[in-house]
Amino acid sequence: MPIATPEVYNEMLDRAKAGKFAYPAINVTSSQTLHAALRGFAEAESDGIIQISTGGAEFLGGQHNKDMVTGAVALAEFAHIVAEKYDVNVALHTDHCPKDKLDGYVRPLLALSEKRVQAGLNPLFQSHMWDGSAETLADNLAIAQELLPRAAAAKIILEVEITPTGGEEDGVTHEINDSLYTTVEDAIRTAEALGLGEQGRYLLAASFGNVHGVYKPGNVVLRPELLKQLNDGVAAKFGRPAESKPFDFVFHGGSGSSVEEIHTALENGVVKMNIDTDTQYAFTRPVVDHMFKNYDGVLKVDGEVGAKKTYDPRTWGKLAEAGMAQRVVEACQSLRSAGTKIK
Figure: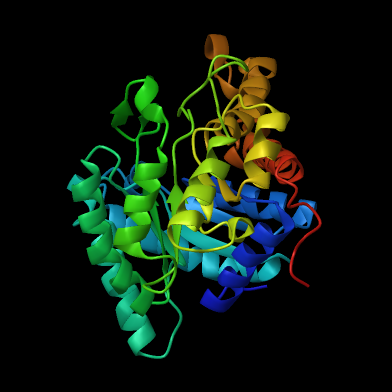
Protein backbone atom coordinates (compact mmCIF):
# COMPACT_ATOMS: atom_id res chain seq x y z
CA MET A 1 0.00 0.00 0.00
CA PRO A 2 1.15 3.59 -0.43
CA ILE A 3 2.16 6.01 2.31
CA ALA A 4 -0.99 6.83 4.27
CA THR A 5 -3.10 9.68 2.96
CA PRO A 6 -4.18 12.31 5.51
CA GLU A 7 -7.57 10.60 5.69
CA VAL A 8 -6.04 7.18 6.33
CA TYR A 9 -3.67 8.59 8.95
CA ASN A 10 -6.60 10.10 10.82
CA GLU A 11 -8.39 6.77 10.60
CA MET A 12 -5.31 4.99 11.94
CA LEU A 13 -5.19 7.27 14.98
CA ASP A 14 -8.93 6.99 15.59
CA ARG A 15 -8.76 3.20 15.45
CA ALA A 16 -5.82 3.13 17.85
CA LYS A 17 -7.60 5.31 20.38
CA ALA A 18 -10.84 3.36 20.17
CA GLY A 19 -9.05 0.01 20.30
CA LYS A 20 -6.61 1.03 23.07
CA PHE A 21 -3.49 0.26 21.09
CA ALA A 22 -0.68 2.44 19.77
CA TYR A 23 1.53 2.55 16.71
CA PRO A 24 5.27 2.19 17.06
CA ALA A 25 6.94 5.30 15.64
CA ILE A 26 10.30 4.06 14.40
CA ASN A 27 13.20 6.45 13.87
CA VAL A 28 15.13 5.78 10.68
CA THR A 29 18.44 7.12 9.39
CA SER A 30 18.90 5.32 6.08
CA SER A 31 17.12 3.45 3.32
CA GLN A 32 18.09 0.23 5.06
CA THR A 33 16.60 1.14 8.45
CA LEU A 34 13.51 2.32 6.56
CA HIS A 35 13.17 -1.12 4.96
CA ALA A 36 13.72 -2.76 8.36
CA ALA A 37 10.86 -0.74 9.85
CA LEU A 38 8.55 -1.42 6.91
CA ARG A 39 9.40 -5.12 7.02
CA GLY A 40 8.68 -5.26 10.76
CA PHE A 41 5.29 -3.61 10.31
CA ALA A 42 4.42 -5.96 7.45
CA GLU A 43 5.46 -9.06 9.38
CA ALA A 44 3.40 -7.92 12.37
CA GLU A 45 0.45 -7.00 10.11
CA SER A 46 0.44 -3.59 11.72
CA ASP A 47 0.19 -0.13 10.24
CA GLY A 48 2.81 2.21 11.64
CA ILE A 49 4.75 5.45 11.72
CA ILE A 50 8.20 6.15 10.30
CA GLN A 51 9.95 9.19 11.69
CA ILE A 52 13.08 11.25 11.04
CA SER A 53 14.67 13.37 13.77
CA THR A 54 16.71 16.49 13.07
CA GLY A 55 19.90 14.48 13.65
CA GLY A 56 18.64 11.69 11.43
CA ALA A 57 17.74 14.16 8.69
CA GLU A 58 21.16 15.80 8.96
CA PHE A 59 22.81 12.38 8.62
CA LEU A 60 20.59 11.53 5.65
CA GLY A 61 21.58 14.84 4.02
CA GLY A 62 25.15 13.55 3.78
CA GLN A 63 28.25 14.57 5.67
CA HIS A 64 29.34 16.96 2.91
CA ASN A 65 26.75 19.61 3.80
CA LYS A 66 24.51 17.97 6.42
CA ASP A 67 21.33 19.60 5.14
CA MET A 68 18.34 18.45 7.17
CA VAL A 69 15.62 19.32 4.67
CA THR A 70 17.48 17.58 1.83
CA GLY A 71 17.90 14.46 3.93
CA ALA A 72 14.28 14.35 5.10
CA VAL A 73 12.83 15.02 1.65
CA ALA A 74 15.07 12.45 -0.02
CA LEU A 75 14.11 9.64 2.33
CA ALA A 76 10.44 10.62 2.27
CA GLU A 77 10.39 10.50 -1.53
CA PHE A 78 12.16 7.13 -1.42
CA ALA A 79 9.64 5.88 1.13
CA HIS A 80 6.72 6.89 -1.09
CA ILE A 81 8.09 4.53 -3.75
CA VAL A 82 9.21 1.51 -1.73
CA ALA A 83 6.25 1.51 0.70
CA GLU A 84 4.06 0.42 -2.22
CA LYS A 85 5.57 -3.06 -1.88
CA TYR A 86 4.53 -3.52 1.75
CA ASP A 87 0.99 -4.53 2.64
CA VAL A 88 0.55 -1.97 5.43
CA ASN A 89 -0.21 1.74 5.78
CA VAL A 90 2.66 3.89 6.99
CA ALA A 91 2.64 7.55 7.98
CA LEU A 92 5.75 9.74 7.74
CA HIS A 93 6.59 11.99 10.67
CA THR A 94 9.41 14.32 11.69
CA ASP A 95 10.60 13.85 15.26
CA HIS A 96 11.85 16.36 17.88
CA CYS A 97 12.46 19.82 16.43
CA PRO A 98 13.49 22.49 18.97
CA LYS A 99 13.08 26.23 18.48
CA ASP A 100 16.53 26.88 17.02
CA LYS A 101 15.96 24.33 14.25
CA LEU A 102 12.42 25.24 13.19
CA ASP A 103 13.62 27.52 10.37
CA GLY A 104 15.98 24.84 9.09
CA TYR A 105 13.62 21.89 9.35
CA VAL A 106 9.89 22.00 10.12
CA ARG A 107 8.98 25.35 8.58
CA PRO A 108 10.59 24.57 5.18
CA LEU A 109 8.99 21.12 5.19
CA LEU A 110 5.61 22.65 5.97
CA ALA A 111 6.07 25.09 3.08
CA LEU A 112 6.89 22.22 0.75
CA SER A 113 3.72 20.35 1.72
CA GLU A 114 1.64 23.52 1.46
CA LYS A 115 2.70 23.80 -2.19
CA ARG A 116 1.93 20.13 -2.80
CA VAL A 117 -1.57 20.44 -1.33
CA GLN A 118 -2.24 23.61 -3.33
CA ALA A 119 -1.32 21.60 -6.42
CA GLY A 120 -3.84 18.91 -5.55
CA LEU A 121 -1.32 16.44 -4.06
CA ASN A 122 -1.00 14.98 -0.58
CA PRO A 123 1.57 16.40 1.86
CA LEU A 124 5.02 14.83 1.83
CA PHE A 125 4.90 14.14 5.58
CA GLN A 126 1.73 13.33 7.47
CA SER A 127 2.81 14.90 10.76
CA HIS A 128 5.53 17.13 12.20
CA MET A 129 6.71 17.58 15.76
CA TRP A 130 7.38 20.91 17.44
CA ASP A 131 9.43 20.28 20.59
CA GLY A 132 9.08 23.36 22.76
CA SER A 133 9.82 21.53 25.99
CA ALA A 134 12.93 23.67 26.57
CA GLU A 135 10.83 26.87 26.40
CA THR A 136 8.36 28.34 28.87
CA LEU A 137 4.90 26.89 28.39
CA ALA A 138 3.64 30.30 27.22
CA ASP A 139 6.32 30.57 24.51
CA ASN A 140 5.90 26.89 23.61
CA LEU A 141 2.16 27.29 23.04
CA ALA A 142 2.58 30.59 21.18
CA ILE A 143 4.77 28.86 18.58
CA ALA A 144 2.35 25.91 18.46
CA GLN A 145 -0.46 28.39 17.74
CA GLU A 146 1.53 29.65 14.74
CA LEU A 147 2.31 26.16 13.44
CA LEU A 148 -1.06 24.45 13.99
CA PRO A 149 -3.13 26.34 11.39
CA ARG A 150 -0.36 25.99 8.82
CA ALA A 151 -0.20 22.27 9.47
CA ALA A 152 -3.98 21.91 9.31
CA ALA A 153 -4.13 23.78 6.00
CA ALA A 154 -1.53 21.39 4.60
CA LYS A 155 -3.50 18.36 5.90
CA ILE A 156 -0.73 17.65 8.41
CA ILE A 157 -1.09 16.71 12.08
CA LEU A 158 1.11 18.62 14.52
CA GLU A 159 2.75 16.96 17.50
CA VAL A 160 3.61 19.14 20.48
CA GLU A 161 5.67 18.38 23.58
CA ILE A 162 4.55 20.68 26.38
CA THR A 163 6.78 19.62 29.27
CA PRO A 164 10.26 18.07 29.39
CA THR A 165 11.18 14.47 28.73
CA GLY A 166 14.32 13.63 30.67
CA GLY A 167 17.66 12.55 29.22
CA GLU A 168 19.07 13.61 25.86
CA GLU A 169 17.86 13.37 22.27
CA ASP A 170 19.58 15.09 19.34
CA GLY A 171 21.23 17.65 21.59
CA VAL A 172 18.11 18.54 23.62
CA THR A 173 18.82 17.68 27.25
CA HIS A 174 16.63 17.78 30.35
CA GLU A 175 17.45 16.81 33.91
CA ILE A 176 15.70 13.85 35.47
CA ASN A 177 13.61 15.44 38.22
CA ASP A 178 10.04 16.27 39.31
CA SER A 179 9.50 18.58 36.30
CA LEU A 180 9.07 15.44 34.20
CA TYR A 181 5.38 15.25 35.13
CA THR A 182 2.79 17.29 33.23
CA THR A 183 0.13 18.86 35.45
CA VAL A 184 -3.59 19.16 34.80
CA GLU A 185 -3.07 22.93 34.68
CA ASP A 186 -0.50 22.46 31.88
CA ALA A 187 -2.99 20.33 29.97
CA ILE A 188 -5.80 22.86 30.39
CA ARG A 189 -3.56 25.71 29.19
CA THR A 190 -2.70 23.60 26.14
CA ALA A 191 -6.36 22.97 25.32
CA GLU A 192 -7.18 26.65 25.80
CA ALA A 193 -4.41 27.64 23.38
CA LEU A 194 -4.75 24.92 20.73
CA GLY A 195 -8.34 23.81 21.10
CA LEU A 196 -9.49 20.22 21.09
CA GLY A 197 -9.43 19.54 17.37
CA GLU A 198 -11.46 22.43 16.00
CA GLN A 199 -8.29 24.39 15.14
CA GLY A 200 -6.56 21.34 13.71
CA ARG A 201 -5.67 17.92 15.04
CA TYR A 202 -2.57 17.57 17.18
CA LEU A 203 -0.81 14.86 19.12
CA LEU A 204 0.31 15.63 22.67
CA ALA A 205 3.60 14.43 24.14
CA ALA A 206 2.86 14.87 27.84
CA SER A 207 5.40 13.90 30.47
CA PHE A 208 4.75 11.18 33.02
CA GLY A 209 8.34 10.47 34.06
CA ASN A 210 9.60 9.61 30.57
CA VAL A 211 13.36 9.64 29.93
CA HIS A 212 15.20 9.38 26.62
CA GLY A 213 18.16 7.02 26.48
CA VAL A 214 19.14 3.60 27.79
CA TYR A 215 17.87 2.48 31.17
CA LYS A 216 17.27 -0.86 32.85
CA PRO A 217 13.71 -1.61 34.01
CA GLY A 218 13.01 0.09 37.33
CA ASN A 219 15.49 2.94 36.84
CA VAL A 220 12.84 5.28 35.45
CA VAL A 221 9.75 6.06 37.54
CA LEU A 222 6.85 6.19 35.11
CA ARG A 223 3.35 7.25 36.13
CA PRO A 224 1.23 6.43 33.07
CA GLU A 225 -1.91 6.73 35.21
CA LEU A 226 -1.24 10.49 35.15
CA LEU A 227 -2.51 10.57 31.56
CA LYS A 228 -6.00 9.69 32.78
CA GLN A 229 -5.87 12.62 35.19
CA LEU A 230 -4.91 14.97 32.35
CA ASN A 231 -7.71 13.78 30.09
CA ASP A 232 -10.26 13.79 32.90
CA GLY A 233 -9.23 17.28 34.02
CA VAL A 234 -9.53 18.73 30.53
CA ALA A 235 -12.81 16.92 29.86
CA ALA A 236 -14.29 18.38 33.05
CA LYS A 237 -13.01 21.87 32.25
CA PHE A 238 -14.55 21.83 28.77
CA GLY A 239 -17.77 20.05 29.67
CA ARG A 240 -17.01 16.81 27.91
CA PRO A 241 -17.73 13.27 29.13
CA ALA A 242 -14.80 11.73 31.02
CA GLU A 243 -14.70 8.79 28.60
CA SER A 244 -14.09 11.13 25.64
CA LYS A 245 -10.31 11.26 26.29
CA PRO A 246 -9.76 14.67 24.64
CA PHE A 247 -6.05 14.18 23.94
CA ASP A 248 -4.21 11.83 21.57
CA PHE A 249 -1.11 11.11 23.65
CA VAL A 250 2.41 10.21 22.51
CA PHE A 251 4.74 8.10 24.66
CA HIS A 252 8.34 9.38 24.48
CA GLY A 253 11.36 7.94 26.25
CA GLY A 254 9.98 4.44 26.66
CA SER A 255 13.20 2.38 26.66
CA GLY A 256 13.21 0.02 29.62
CA SER A 257 9.47 0.39 30.22
CA SER A 258 7.63 -2.68 31.44
CA VAL A 259 4.78 -4.17 29.41
CA GLU A 260 2.45 -3.32 32.30
CA GLU A 261 3.45 0.35 32.16
CA ILE A 262 2.98 0.41 28.40
CA HIS A 263 -0.48 -1.14 28.65
CA THR A 264 -1.54 1.34 31.32
CA ALA A 265 -0.50 4.15 28.97
CA LEU A 266 -2.55 2.57 26.17
CA GLU A 267 -5.62 2.39 28.39
CA ASN A 268 -5.23 6.11 29.05
CA GLY A 269 -5.07 7.42 25.49
CA VAL A 270 -1.57 6.82 24.07
CA VAL A 271 -1.81 6.25 20.30
CA LYS A 272 1.87 6.61 19.33
CA MET A 273 5.05 5.41 21.03
CA ASN A 274 8.48 6.50 19.85
CA ILE A 275 11.10 3.77 19.53
CA ASP A 276 14.70 4.57 18.64
CA THR A 277 17.25 3.34 21.20
CA ASP A 278 16.05 -0.27 21.11
CA THR A 279 15.89 -0.46 17.31
CA GLN A 280 19.35 1.10 17.00
CA TYR A 281 20.74 -1.71 19.13
CA ALA A 282 18.72 -4.36 17.28
CA PHE A 283 20.19 -3.09 13.99
CA THR A 284 23.79 -2.93 15.21
CA ARG A 285 23.96 -6.12 17.30
CA PRO A 286 23.90 -8.60 14.36
CA VAL A 287 26.59 -6.55 12.60
CA VAL A 288 28.88 -6.77 15.62
CA ASP A 289 28.29 -10.52 15.83
CA HIS A 290 29.18 -10.91 12.15
CA MET A 291 32.35 -8.82 12.49
CA PHE A 292 33.59 -10.70 15.55
CA LYS A 293 32.94 -14.10 14.01
CA ASN A 294 34.49 -13.15 10.68
CA TYR A 295 37.26 -10.77 11.74
CA ASP A 296 39.84 -12.42 9.47
CA GLY A 297 37.46 -12.09 6.53
CA VAL A 298 36.33 -8.51 7.04
CA LEU A 299 39.92 -7.47 7.77
CA LYS A 300 43.02 -8.11 5.70
CA VAL A 301 44.96 -9.76 8.54
CA ASP A 302 48.70 -10.43 8.31
CA GLY A 303 48.97 -9.51 4.66
CA GLU A 304 46.06 -11.71 3.55
CA VAL A 305 43.28 -10.48 1.28
CA GLY A 306 40.23 -11.07 3.50
CA ALA A 307 37.00 -12.54 2.21
CA LYS A 308 34.95 -10.28 -0.03
CA LYS A 309 31.66 -11.99 0.77
CA THR A 310 32.11 -11.26 4.48
CA TYR A 311 32.89 -7.55 4.12
CA ASP A 312 30.35 -6.94 1.36
CA PRO A 313 27.90 -4.51 3.05
CA ARG A 314 25.00 -6.53 1.70
CA THR A 315 26.08 -9.55 3.75
CA TRP A 316 26.02 -7.89 7.16
CA GLY A 317 23.37 -5.37 6.07
CA LYS A 318 20.81 -8.13 5.60
CA LEU A 319 21.48 -9.33 9.13
CA ALA A 320 21.05 -5.81 10.48
CA GLU A 321 17.74 -5.37 8.67
CA ALA A 322 16.42 -8.68 9.98
CA GLY A 323 17.44 -7.84 13.56
CA MET A 324 15.75 -4.44 13.52
CA ALA A 325 12.64 -5.79 11.80
CA GLN A 326 12.21 -8.37 14.54
CA ARG A 327 12.42 -5.65 17.19
CA VAL A 328 9.70 -3.70 15.34
CA VAL A 329 7.51 -6.82 15.41
CA GLU A 330 8.04 -7.05 19.18
CA ALA A 331 7.08 -3.39 19.53
CA CYS A 332 3.86 -3.97 17.61
CA GLN A 333 3.03 -6.88 19.88
CA SER A 334 3.74 -4.88 23.06
CA LEU A 335 1.67 -1.95 21.80
CA ARG A 336 -1.16 -4.27 20.67
CA SER A 337 -1.09 -2.98 17.10
CA ALA A 338 -0.09 -6.36 15.65
CA GLY A 339 -2.83 -7.74 13.43
CA THR A 340 -4.77 -4.47 13.34
CA LYS A 341 -3.78 -3.15 9.89
CA ILE A 342 -6.48 -1.47 7.87
CA LYS A 343 -7.56 -3.98 5.24
